[in-house]
Each structure stands twice: as C-alpha cells, then as structure tokens.
Length: 333
Image (cartoon, rainbow, N blue to C red; front, side, top):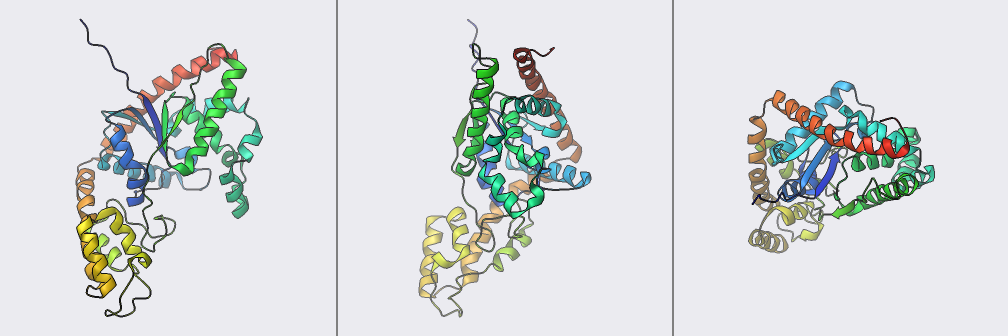
C-alpha cells in the first residue's frame, strides 16, 4: 500500500530589505520562521518593492541590503531545502495581480489605513500612489500563494484583515460559485519587544541596535556604554532595575538565577552596573556566535543562487494562481 502524502499548511511572510538584521528582527520574526519550517510549507520573500514606497535607495544599495538580509536569514537557520526564498521584484506576477485586484478594490479601503494617514501627516512626500497601494500590493503578495496563514505580530493583523476583505470581494464579484482565493488567517505570534541600547524599541533608524552578526567586542562595547538607572549616580547608590534599559535585555537573554543576582546587587548597591552588564554581554555573544559562523561559510554567489532557485519555485505557484484569476475575469489565458 502506498504511503499517503501529507500536505503541510502553507504560510507566507516577507521583510523589507534594510541590510544586515539586528536582534529585534531575530526575536520579532526570524526565530518564529525557523520554527515554522518544521511544521509548514514556508514561503519567505524579500519585499524590495515595498522598500521603495518609503525610501529612495540607489539600486546598488537596495541589492546589497537584500543579500545582506538573506545572509542573516540563512545564518539564523532558515533552510532553503525546507522553504522557498524569493525576491519580490523578480516576480512580475505580483505586479499583475496587484493591478487586477486594483480593478475591484475600493480606494477608500486603502486611504483608511492608520499607518498611511499617520505617516503621510508626518511626511507629505509619502503621499504617492505606491504608498497608498501598499496594503493592496501586500494582499497580492499573499494571495498569489494561497497560504493558510500569515505569521504577523499583533500590530500587523490589520493588514491581513485587508487581504481577507480583498479576497472576499474578488470571489464575490468574479468567482462566487468556485472561489479562487481562500481567506488567509493571521497567525499571531508572540514577538518579543527587544529594547535598543537606549531603552526604546531596537531600530536601525534610531541607531540603537545590536546587529545579529556584530563582532564580540563590538557587542561588548555597545552594552558597556548603555545608560543605566539615571538615579544611580554613584557606585554606592542603590538602584531600581525597572528604570534600567539593560534590565529589559536581561529579561530576554539571561536565566532566573543570573537575573535574581543582578537585581539584588542593584537594589543593595553591592554590584556595579558593569558587573550587571557582563553576563548579558556573554549571553548575547553566545547567541551571535553560530550566526557569524554560518554566515562566514556562505559564498555570496551561493546566496544569490539560493534566491534564484527559490524565485523559480515561487513563480510556478504564482503563475498557476494567475491563470485562475485571468480565467474568471474573462481575460485571455
């Protein structure tokens, strides 16, 4: 008797290429991607068209950022043998589906997005058609691959809901009897808010990040110079960990015993701030070590070839979906 084929549920997610990733990217998304490989059919893409909606990078910069980012994906444990990695801009199918969906999506759905209104209010130059259409392009990105779920943080769930509305409207207008698109579910994931060196959310734009592949001494220097409890002026002053940005990183990286010792030492002034920072430095360096090792073993051409193969694999899926869409819309297929 033949062994039945077990089809894993598909998930899709992407990242805008901003270059080498930091610890916030890993704990906010990549860590979950690595785990999903064991249970799902994963499609992960470089959202380089999306990067153009809010930035004006040179072509050389954007390409370099894309390959640096994918290097970090592979270093973190993303396995191209178990998932599909591809470049959005190499897939004209995304642009075609975006155009076709635009024919039946009310513009008011896009204009109401809080992220659009808030960012345009802060920077009027962002009031472009591309930025307005960002959620619809994102819907095309998703619907082309018919995933069961889209792993997102709670703050991005609204974008998945727009995709569901777009799918629902398209099916009603063109394919009510035999829907083309299933409505993907938002896979809400627990995403750690990784604080930056200044206590705010870790971000490249705030220049407060620790890169995934920072050299050990770079990591050590960044943490040693972090601000601590502002009320602990002298070594003999008792402190409160709740006021210290370093303590927030301890919550992610050190064990209960280490944290208990650091907290007691801070509150009683029996331990200095550099003493508290040292076990954190060592814990982060331990996490970074295998990432740097894997990245060093990668040839740049290997990274490019990985994306080439993944893009062709993704294209086969995308073309099949587009044939269905064109067919129900009455276009020549």
